[in-house]
Structure formats: structure tokens, C-alpha cells
Length: 300
Image (cartoon, rainbow, N blue to C red; front, side, top):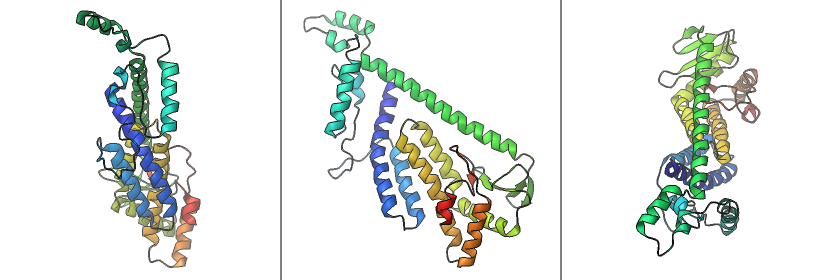
């Protein structure tokens, strides 16, 4: 488990540099079509999912393996981030707080004149400080990931239960009294759920927006993004990336719907956004909600 966690940790660190680059690019391209932002977040997802990387002389990464997998077996464990200030600070913490806690590493107990049998016996009874620390943190990582996945499953079941009494309007569109804001639910057979009694004009805007989501397969990408977040829950930059991905997905759909439309249609669409706005403060894996994120910015 320690080897897997160290691999995930290294992938997380390397992806963090890419997230920072995307944040800068996203700011510089703020006037560009929003689908470009979604594409950039896709590159981040690939970096987080792909277990290997192509190294080159022009790589943006200061170091391809910040924390070597052999660190738990080294006599003097150190990281190599490629940034001297970071390396000095972290390596100092390792030396002063982990290696000096009263435990000694196996290698430090080995003497040049000790027999092989003595070494084997010593190795069976001595645990290196870094080995215990990495094992403990790895366990915390697994628990956090399990909590995130459980949250996703619970959220889906609760929403599914809430729309049990929905009524079919037409095709994959269903109306429900328990729905406060329109959304899409489902991965294989996505359905559009709308509040009961919604006005015809607002309903048309909502359907146009949600169908744009389905054509773009956003009902796949958002859950996939949350699953990646569940693995890298310990990295604040991955949380930032997921939140901005959700906003960019909604903005890209808005742009697709109002493309080549006149100002009256845009005003009417903006009013529909305000009418359906849902001030959710909790990170959601599902559903894709029409008025869930960044309504003020989307109206502007």
C-alpha cells in the first residue's frame, strides 16, 4: 500500500504544477470560448490518471519523482522537488522530527562486520521511522477516499429517492414537486428533471441547456472528475480544479445555447438562470444542475 500511496502522491505533486499553469492560462484566456477551459481541465485529468509521464529536456516539471519509492528504506530519506527552498524545508522536517524521534532506521543499525543472519534478524524486528509514517498516512488516504466515494453514492441514492414520484413530460424530461432547480440525473440513460409548474419560456431554456450537457457528455465528465477528486482529496489544488471545472462546464453549455442568438433571447435566458438559481454550498458529484454554480458570472 505504501508504494501505491507514494505513486499517487508523486502524481499529485506533478499534476499540481499543471493545475497552476492551467489557472494562469484560464485567466489569460478569460475572453476565449469556455470549452477551451474544459479541454485544459481534461489535460489535468489525464495527468492525474496516467501513471507515467514522458520526460524531456523542456519539461515543465522541476522533478519527475519528488518522493522516491525507496524513501522508506533509505538511511537518510530525502525528497527532490527540484526547488531548493522546498527541498531544504521538507528535508529538515524529516531529519528533525521523524528520524530523531527515538527510532533508528534498519540501515543505521547495520555494522560492516555484522553477519547476514544478524542483519536478517534485525530487519525483522526494526521498523524505520519513515516506513511507519508513510504507512500511517497511506491508511489515512484510504479512509479519506472511502469517505468521498461513500458520499458520492449516498448523494446519488438520496437524489434518486427524491425524484421517485416524478411524472414524464416528454421523452427523457420529467417533472417533480420535490425538485427545486432543473438537473440531469443518470449516466447511461440521463434524464432531465424540472420543477412542477415551470413556465413554458423558462422550460424551453432549461431543456436547451440540459440537452447541450447531454450532447457534450457532461453527465460523464463531472462524475469522472469527482472520482479523480476522491483519489486526490488531500490536494487543495485538485479541489480548486474540480470546482472550476464545474463552473466552466456550465459556462460552456450557456455559450452553446446562446450562440447566434439575439439580445432578447440572452436576456430571457439570463432571467431563467436567475429564476432557477440554487445556492448550493456543498460540493456535488451529481446532478448537473441548471442554476447550481456561478450564476452571477454566467449572467454577466
